[in-house]
Length: 247
Ligand SMILES: [Zn+2]
Image (cartoon, rainbow, N blue to C red; front, side):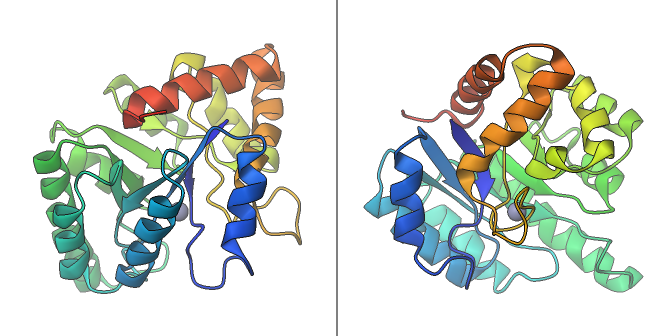
């Protein structure tokens, strides 16, 4: 099992992140842990260094919560060989309603698209209530993209998939009818599983954990009429391929 997106190093996410990693190692093959602010970026690099070949870092900047995007861009350049992707980055029109600030978000996102292109690694996209705008910005970029926690329309999801991009399935599939509908559009050859842990827990009030992708796999198996094992096997292979993981 490989969780392609979570936030193990988000401030206050877990009392003891090392325990979470130890527990994950018992049943998982790897974890891609993302960051969305400068300090968090430093911590994911550190955690990945301590858990080489198991924890893989991505460096990004959250459109409304990020800090020091220039610092993050520099960190990406300096750590190109250590990271498996850029992100999460993107646009968030859910929390940002001001047109001027939305334009600012676009300018910063463009910088991250450019650096991703330059470094030739994948981009993990945050697109809350700005799915169309994010797609418009990356569609001709030539960058390998995954829309994480995609919650847009079915029509746009189809267009994104047809354009060769990826949409990862989060643990939202465990409790959201809308996300179960979206799963129907995603062929097994393109299924990627993510938790976005510590958020989106299928076992509230417990926080989410990377190994909960197996609960998502059960839901997807029901929808696709295949076994849970088959879903996990596809998701494992797809994750290795998409992020060029050295596992
Ligand atoms: Zn996230």
